[in-house]
Image (cartoon, rainbow, N blue to C red):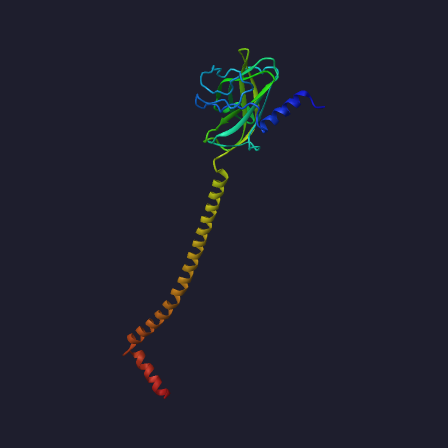
Length: 259
């Protein structure tokens, strides 16, 4: 049976995919950033600033009646390019009796097999006057970038939104799952390097084979003339050296007798 909590999460996810009822200006922008849309005329949502209480690494419990959900727009595979900005939408639904004052959104990257192994603390985006009245909902953008030196692979991303209700701090974990980190142009670069290396190797092998064939042909060609020239030269020298000796005289006398 479908529970009320499941219906709430479904409606909140639908809110993120469609146009949100309340949109908040992008965090860490200039102090004159304008409010995108308000729940009513008296509320002033989404003005971003730096004058925010620093909670450090302190953690808080979630408040009852506050539901959160997150979506990677146009990135269902949750692929994060190292060194480049990645967009994440955080939806908050306030089913409580008091207004929610959103303070900040932060995230961190951990090793997938052990969350105690922190890889990187990501950007903390802070908000001023980002209040959500009771029975209202709002969407907040979160932009982060992992280090460009981070080795490609699978990591765990933990995203947290910090807020106040009646001046008491709370926090919700809106995302706790895996992301796939890739280097900028990683696939193209690896493929190009592989193809270039393979091409160079084949070219070197071809040049060595052709060079070896040319050397073999050159050796065969040079050996034949040397034998013929050497024989002729030797015969001529021997005839010239034996002229006038007893050997040549005996040869001439034999030839006369035959006649």
